[in-house]
Length: 429
Ligand code: KE4
Image (cartoon, rainbow, N blue to C red; front, side, top):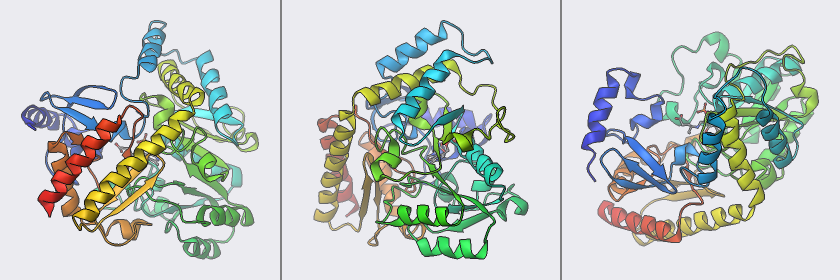
């Protein structure tokens, strides 16, 4: 594969955009080399600036669950745009998508739309603090909830990619209110609660983390976490920005049969346009302005184009639940195929999978939390990443990311991916 034009475009971008990108993980810092510039995409395929056709396992980091340029979504956006793009006043489409989200997600009464997953998580934490009148929050090492100050305390995703878990610019004043536990380790949560009795507003967690690669919650962990929250009058926030509408139509709450007090969404909910949301039972959500005193706002929140895109995609998912079975089967097929390749070539590996989220780790230890995730051999991952890219397979440019499977993938695409994996692993051997 040639990337001459992408490299030239990247050079040009670096003159006017910090790092040449609008989000760090796109810069390929964790895997080396220059990012690829995408011209267009359709279904499971990307078409880059050098004319390469790439099979996509990033899918805009989750939203493209039914494939790129999904016709009904494109049509909905075109039609909606003809009516104008933004009014700064309420529109019916906002109510329609809110009603649909409430129908799809088991335990929520009300939802507020924002413009990103970061905004959703930041706002949910502020709401939890306002509702409980307590300041401290618990998050888990390696879980990523966006780039709000309170979360950039050993966040996963981009920050881990750069190996600087604490971001400059976050004040000690902020950091002191964010307490760090280890995922899948209830004792670490209990210890923090004991040391901060009566001061903790909420626990925020990715129920199935996707920012350390994909991590499965161990049996009883989330149930135990919920019990601790109930016992100590702490709100449980599920960050479902990745898992929402992906793990099931009702997200991880439905798949894992555990209800959180507040849930955040992003990615799929916007159908590829900038949308985040946070939701919960009315007694909490009604504390938000203008109903209540907890302030939260946004000029483009509930933007009609984004609402139209998100509504159309969610409706497709709700009306075709067999999609989730198909996604599960396709991802399991890919897992089995790659596992066979790694085993046959005696490569130290772990493959983690939950539903249509999957990740590859070059390590002998099971990857169950941040500490075990960082033990992965990043040099091997880099070679794997670039080797797959040269075979036309675009996987996430970081070992600390999950792959996102799209229903647009065919079994031939999956076989091609497994064959590419075999070719690269043999070269690594
Ligand atoms: P955004 O602000 O990027 O829309 O959402 C933040 C966020 C919140 N919660 C979870 C569980 C997330 O995964 C994310 C964002 N995910 C990353 C991928 N690991 C987005 C990619 C990027 O940063 O460019």
